[in-house]
Length: 638
Image (cartoon, rainbow, N blue to C red; front, side):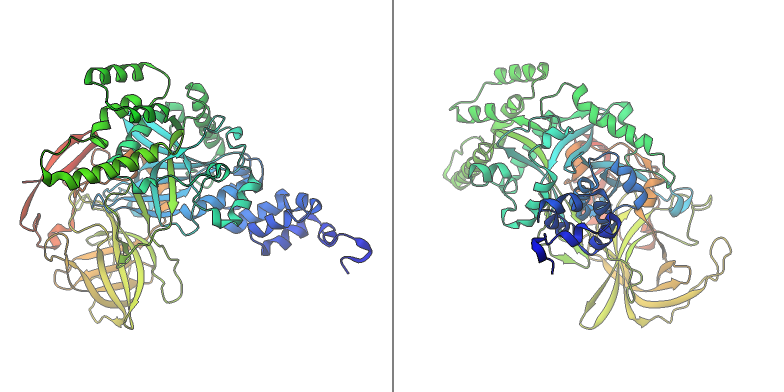
C-alpha cells in the first residue's frame, strides 16, 4: 500500500508532525536514526531535525534536560551534541591506579560541553562532614566538544609554579573501555586549522562520524592511513618504557600553553542554579588562548622531519653543539623537537657498546628497540599527544584490577547500581571511630576513606566486599585496592551493636547485621591478614563494620562524587605526566603539599599492631622535592 501510485515509501513518515516523529524515534538508537536519514533526501531533513536529536540526547542520560539546552548553545545542532555525548559517555566514571598506595582516584564527570577528570586528594574529613565537605580535588584532563561534536583532549599540569594545559587529540573510544592510555601518536599530515575552530575538523563531519561507527572493521586504522593504503605504524605501547616516557616528556614540553588567570576556575556547574555565563566565558577564553599565543597552525602537533634526519646521521652532535641547539630552540617560536631529542638520544637508543661478550644479548635487544623506535618516528610527519580509551583483558582480585606498572594509564572500576539483592553496591565514604560524622574538638583530623562496595558469588556463597580506593592518612597502612572487609550476606551476625545513639543523640534503628572478616595485620605490607567482625546495617542507610576483638569501627555512608566535587575546593595539579599517571611507588601522600592534613594525619594504625616495616626492610619517611613531584613525602629504603 505504501508504494501505490508510485508514491515514495517514506510518505507516511513525512506526513507525521515533528513532535509525533520525535516520539516515534524514541524507540530508535542514534545509529538507527542516522541510517534512516540516508534512506532518501526527503527523510534526511526530517531525521536531522533538532527535535529528533534532542530526544536522542535525553535518552543517553548523560546530563539533565536543562543542561542539554545550555550545551546546545555551544554546538551546531543537537545532532552534533549527540555525537559528542556518545563519544564520551563510556569515559564517565571512576578511574584508578595502584600508585600511590594511599589512592589515586580520578572521577570523570560532565562539565560544560565537556567531561572533566578530577583527582580526589587523600585528605581528612572536612569540618562540615562528608556530605557538605569541602572535598579537595585537582584537575587531570578535560575532553571538550567542538562545534561539530568532535572531541578535543586537554591534559592539565603544573610546572615552575604555573598551570598549563597540553592540547591533544582523541582516538576512537571503545564502548566498553576499561583503560585510559596517555600516548604519543605520529600523523601523516597536519590538520589545517586552529584546534578549536571547526575548520580543523573539516574532514570529520558528523555524518562521517556516525558512518564510521557502522564500519568496525576499520577500527584502529586512521583515515589518513586508509586513504594512502599504508600499514599501521608500530604501536606506541610496543616501544620501550624509556622511549615512551621520553616521547611524552618531549611532546608535552612542546605543546604546553600557560593558563592565564582569566581561564582558571571550575569547568563544571557547582550548583543547580548555576549561571552558565561564567562557564561560557571560561570556555571562550580557553578557546581564545590558541589564537592569542601565536602557536603553530595546530598546537597539538610537532614536526618529526628533523628528528628523522638526525636519526639517519652516522654520528651525533657534540655536547657543545647540543647546548647551542637547546639555546636556539628556546629562543625560537617555532616548535621543534630536535634540541630535546639530541640531549636524550644516547639515553634512548644509543647506549655505549658493551666491552665483553656477556653484554651481546643486551646489545642486540637495544638494537631491536632502536629499529622499532626509528620505525615509529618514520611513520608520520607530525607527532602529537593522544588519549586512547581502549578495552584490555584485565584480571582482577576481589574487585580490584591487576595493573601494568609501566603504562601511563588509568583503569576503570566497574560500578554497579543498587538493585534488589545488591542494595549496598556503589561508592561509600567514611571514617574510623565513633560517633560518626563531623570531627570534634576532642577527635580532630579523622582520615577520610572511600570504599567501593561490590557483590561476589563463589561456590554458592554470596559476599559483600568493601574495597578501599582512597584513604586520607599520612602514611598508608594497607595496599591500595585492599578489601577492608568481606561479609557473608547469607550469614546473619548475632553480635550486639554497642551504642544506642549517634553523636547527636539520635536513636539508632538497626535493620540487619552480617558476619564477616575485616582487614588486619598479616605477612608484611603486601599480604594483610583478617580478623572476625560484623557489618551492621541501619535504617537510615548507614553501614558500620566493627572488628570483634579490637571493637574498632568503620562507619560508612553512601556518597555522590559529582555532588561532592561541585562543593569542593580545587588545588593545583602535579606536573603533566605524573598528574595523569603517577608510576613511582609511594606509600605516603604525594599530594601533601596541597592537602588540608597536618604533618601527622589521623590513622587507624592504632587499631592494628603492624609496624612500618615490610619484609624486614626498614622504611623511614623523608620529604623529597623532585622535578616530578611538586611536594611530597616519599619512602626511602635503607
